[in-house]
Amino acid sequence: MSAANGHSAPPALLGQALIDAIKQAVREELDSQPQAQKELLTPEQLAERLNVPRTWVYERSRAGKIPTHRIGRYIRFDFQEVVKSQKNLLTGNHK
Image 1 (cartoon, rainbow, N blue to C red):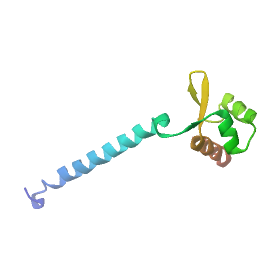
Image 2 (tube, helix red, strand yellow):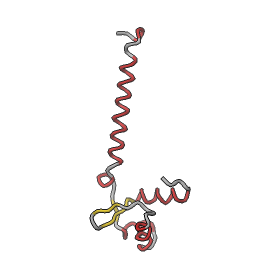
Image 3 (cartoon, one colour):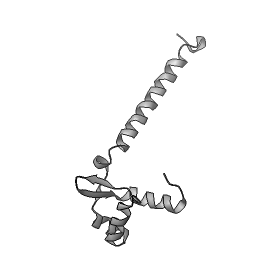
Image 4 (cartoon, rainbow, N blue to C red):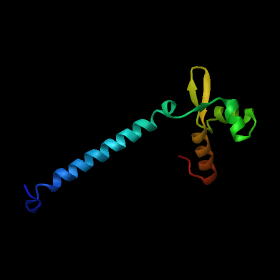
């Protein structure tokens, strides 16, 4: 089959679409597994990194103002998620 009769283009486009779909699925899977990809901090470690009181971390977590990961009875925080959430609050972008 040749490009002149139009039969080679669709399989190439389908192949690229499949590759793009696989890439997107892999990205989504990696994003959905924060514990496997990111270091989780204790409230004390987060407070130290942000240079805020430990009570601020607990208050914000309880109020749902910062992303919190629960592991049994413990709470942990991903530093990048917390920073991003605070930037979103400052810019009015509440995603």
